[in-house]
Amino acid sequence: MSSPEIASLSWGHMKVKGCPASYKDCKVWPGGSRAWDWRETGTAHHPGVQPADLEEVLKKGVETLVIGRGMNEALQVPSTTLDYIKKQGVDVKVFQTEKAVREYNTLAGQGSKVGGVFHSTC
Image 1 (cartoon, rainbow, N blue to C red):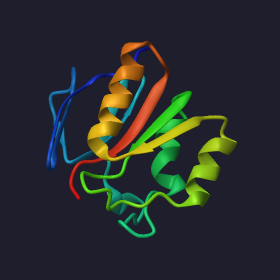
Image 2 (spheres, helix red, strand yellow; image 1 turned 135 degrees about the horizontal axis):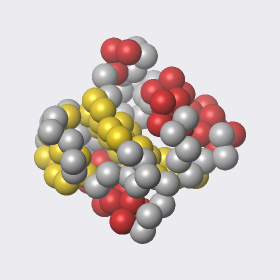
Image 3 (tube, rainbow, N blue to C red; image 1 turned 135 degrees about the vertical axis):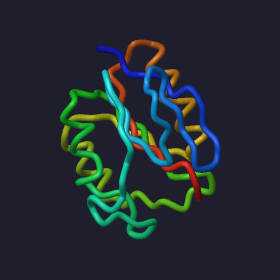
């Protein structure tokens, strides 16, 4: 199963190829995507992305996880979260969201088992 391409990104709006819905923030993995609702895990810009935000994507067998920190990189990614990802044997890449989407799409286009979590505003 391949990772879906992120078809478009603008402030507060993301579209994933093959998905009728649009997202503000999203999670993607080989074969699927869904909204990333921060309220599910109590996530906020500080301290930032938590392991609980990533478990669903990591369980899909990804080899690389791309994290988009927002257009202005307001979303933090604590070192404890990065350590958690690496302990799962997954490579992690953290970028400003536009760059993160480009990286994710490049990896997806190469057939990599890539997943991602992306914040599309600040």
